[in-house]
Length: 145
Image (cartoon, rainbow, N blue to C red):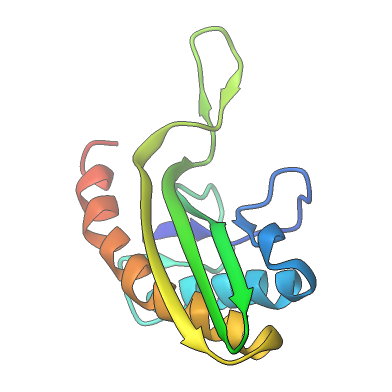
């Protein structure tokens, strides 16, 4: 069975795609993050973003940690984490969300342009590089689970 990639960003208190720093472009940036994750795994038989019974896999959490929009340029930095999914049960019965496979890797980009389109292009440029780099890390971790 393929490893499940969680892309559910519906919990506003615990978002897995967080673009709060992008202001009014936040929704479009978060949608682009989700799209880039789905795109990276849609043709990889070892992973699925489709709902499956008893899923076991990963959550790729991304957050814009630096953002600047000045003149005709937008720049941003995105930090990512790879978390095991579902949350693991601790010895004391609590669910531990922070079982990390890899943490705090980041990348930055700058694009020319203004508004939401430029923010989305910035996010896309970064995640085109970051998401594929998560695949070998998750494949290795799956052999340990």
